[in-house]
Image (cartoon, rainbow, N blue to C red; front, side, top):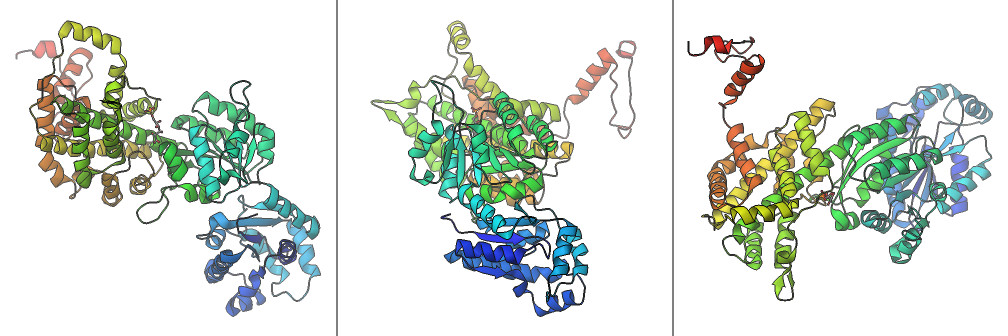
Amino acid sequence: MKKTYAIFIMGVSGSGKTTVGKLLAEKMQIPFFDGDDYHPETNRRKMASGRPLNDDDRRGWLETLNKLAREQLHSASCVIACSALKISYRDLLQKDIAAHTKFVFLKGSYEQVMARMLARDAHFMPASLLTSQFDTLEYPTEALVADIAKEPEQIVSEIMETLTHKTEFGLIGLGVMGKSLCRNLAGHGFRISMYNRHVPGKEEHVASGFKSGFPELEDALPFDKLKAFVNSLQVPRKIMLMVPAGKPTDHILEELLPLLSENDVIIDGGNSHYTDTGRRGELLSRHGISFVGCGVSGGEEGALNGPSLMPGGEKAAYRIVRPFLEAIAAKDGNGQPCCTYIGPEGSGHFVKMVHNGIEYAEMQLLAEVYFSFKHTGKTPDRIAGILESWKTAENSFLLEITADILRTREGDHWLIDRILDQAGNKGTGNWTTIASAQLGIPATMIASSLFARYISAFKADRKAMERVYGQASTPPETDEKTVFEAYRAARLINHYQGFRLIKEASDTFGWDLNLSALARTWTNGCIIRSALMERLPGILKSGDNILLHPEIAPSIKTWRSSLAGFVAACVKSGIPVPVFSEAVNFFHGFSSAHLPASLIQAQRDYFGAHTYRRNDDGGEKIHHTHWKKTKGS
Ligand code: 6PG
């Protein structure tokens, strides 16, 4: 055990914490501290008088023990005996040192413990308080469990065996993302087990081969047999799946299930569909296994150096894996992890899905900007220069990489000019579009960016059409300032639509999501991190509609004519700008108190007697007109 740990031996009074703790410390040659020695006199007197301690009595004492553990951890591991009966107590004990804390729960029945208490002498805690101890105990699903029926020597050797030879965290699926996350975890000092399936001739010895390539994986255990992998982990097990979404995820869960124990926690870090995550969570919970559906953003580099993480599912399960996820996540501007509990069920994967939808639109906006500049005869280098000049006011990860891409040369030409113009996709933009339609939210820019990719895929048709209709495009009559303002306005609208979709899902599914906290986790590590995203946590605190926020509205007012002007110029020139067009059309519609939907209602009523409401009677009553009869009258 190279890493240092504060090992809290916990359990009700009389379960043998001091005996086991002392012996463990002695065997491990590390200091032992008895938590009872740190009670203030007031607490000791209260207990001695037969009155149980309450949360307020315990707070200061737990903080003292946390401070003690933190100080000890600077130099070495230590063992501390402390009842730590409630979740909130354990959270106080491990505050800021969760990744370095282990709880060992001495588990015994009331009768077993009572028999021991009656047998021991000169302890300030009378046996009569035992009932209150059991009443207070919130079962520590996160703890290593030791059976107090066993001899202390045996308990201690089992604890040592677990701490020394079993690993803390397991990862399944050593693709690009899985490998990077393994290195990130190991780099943060976690002892991990790594599993990749064995497919003869295709995937052989993947885990061991991977381990040998990286010094930080020296202590990591590689496996290609699932049972051995599962058995190598400390219980309760924490296992992260990094396998393709869909069937492969169901398949590995099926294989895993019989090998797991109650209270183990499985994290799905793939881009799974949120309804699948909800279904899997329910299935696993029937077996006493917890499931965390965790959005992971940042690509290979993010996974290695700090991704943005969006964990959803049972909050109690998140608590158990939180130290690992927070340690490996990117850090925001205040040094806080870009990882926060999102909400129940599949909410973590839902927000990751919308993240990708926003990402699609952000990418397409930049593609449309590039294309319009290209039509004015600018070289990729020149366009990169313009994008770089935008960074001061409107920086984003995607803007930066786009400029890099445009500057990339291959011999005497730019690489971008040699890349086939057919965009792929892995499905999350499609899912976001479907979800927006199902939830009734006009996330038009996301939908349009998806369809722009689909249009691009029809290369042969496009060529045939161009042969018939000719290349319509001419240089658009616009300037850099207009394009920039249009881009800035469109980004705000895209972010509005994305967050509005998340808000709707939260309300519909009863998830109670915190949009401001979510935006904070997207300020670093993820693909849509940007200077704008850094403003959103504050803006979203004061309301969900960012377009009405006093910090945003004046900008939109200034830029909206450029947005319309840019789209008009491109449309006139025959340059496709579908996502910019959606931005301006959405904005025009969404900021109009009057729309032609009155005619839609009339048409519906005409052919289908679907009825309509009137604007001159309060809009409460339903009306129907016999249109043919009343025509012209
Ligand atoms: C991220 C990315 C990541 C992946 C997308 C690509 O946040 O790290 O979004 O999840 O790059 O799945 O999606 P498409 O292949 O559909 O563009």
